[in-house]
Picture 1 (tube, one colour):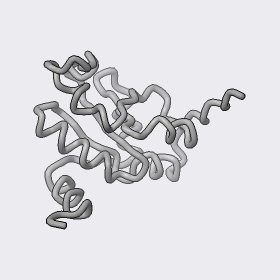
Picture 2 (spheres, rainbow, N blue to C red):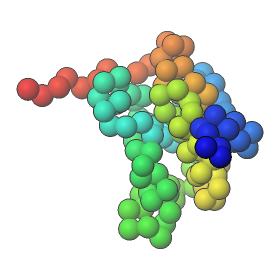
Picture 3 (spheres, one colour):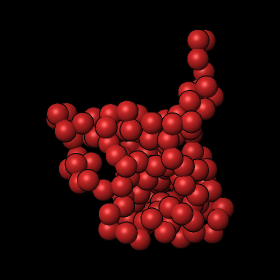
Picture 4 (spheres, one colour):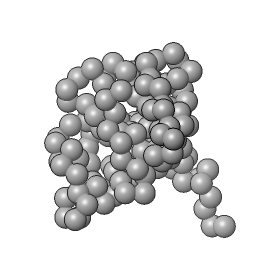
Length: 132
């Protein structure tokens, strides 16, 4: 393997801004900030979510950001600050770097992701009950 995930995450971390869960909570109180949850839908179902976070599955992110894509989401053209997070901070570091490379700005990510958010005792919404 020419370059593994650890090297990719380290490169991303060197070029992006990370915020602590507490800083992300404070940022999220502004109408000019959007928390972006890039976890897989099954993770949200299983682990819960941060109230008010916009869900953008990692696999669709580039398509949702690009205004020329048929899948573009208007939220990404809003001029707001975007704070990405995943479960542990690695996918969101890569996503933040990609968004930054695409020209989306300003962007940040939550160091340690949703796991660090929960560990810090910050508010979450429980997973929705499964339908029988």
